[in-house]
Image (cartoon, rainbow, N blue to C red; front, side, top):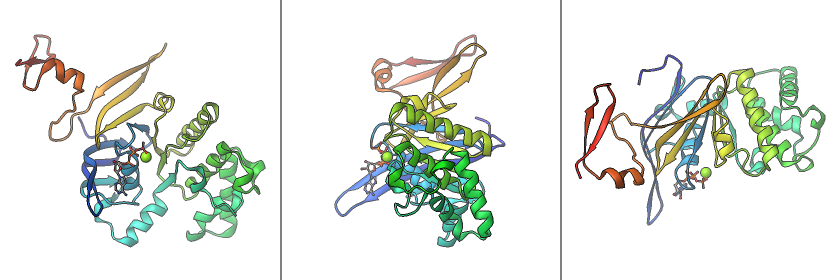
Length: 285
Ligand SMILES: Nc1ncnc2c1ncn2[C@@H]1O[C@H](COP(=O)(O)OP(=O)(O)OP(=O)(O)O)[C@@H](O)[C@H]1O
Ligand SMILES: [Mg+2]
């Protein structure tokens, strides 16, 4: 695959091994991922497949055991603590699944949005006007002085999006942002995230179990056993949306083939080309 001039996120051969006193868990095993600037993608996969682990690494909260991760001009494996703090503060906005983790309970909506800006060198007036702009963007100006307990779950997540955007991040990471919400509210959050992408050009990665989210973004990438396995791309035809599923080949030429197909073709295959140029897999069994 050709290198895109807009490539913004690039993970290669990413491993994450969690070591506890008596057990090692391989959460990521050679994961590869490329994302262009300005894309909205979803990451799907079974529970325990490594989605949150990947997001935490991309957010700079955790470091991989091996492999490489680059986001914009940052090489995440070569950052010292100071660069890492700057990366998290300037490049990344993060939304947690648990609505209560995103907001300080004793601060109002406007104060929660202003808080991340306190450490940047902008004036008080600028801070306030930016927070008010973001409140308007998430359509909650009329909840400006409400504390989180006075907001619904969906409203809390909308404020959380405003908080995540307060430092104008280039990359917005959301770990199951609609997991605790009902269908309609989840759809509103998704529309809001899409409009943020269009209005501000923010690149967005949404981790989700929700089929509906994955079917409303252009690219949905499935993680299986700590590796990216398949990708669904949506091409918008003039009359309808067509979803195409692709199998992903990693940089060392490896491919995850579903068990049902392996059962049909066996464990030893040959490749050949048809007269019309198609690649044919011939089973040896
Ligand atoms: N801090 C940790 N220490 C040890 N093992 C961990 C740790 N965090 C995650 N794991 C393990 O790593 C694997 C991947 O976990 P992860 O949280 O990334 O999965 P996930 O895809 O986000 O799952 P879910 O959909 O349930 O949120 C799991 O087997 C989990 O038990
Ligand atoms: Mg998770």
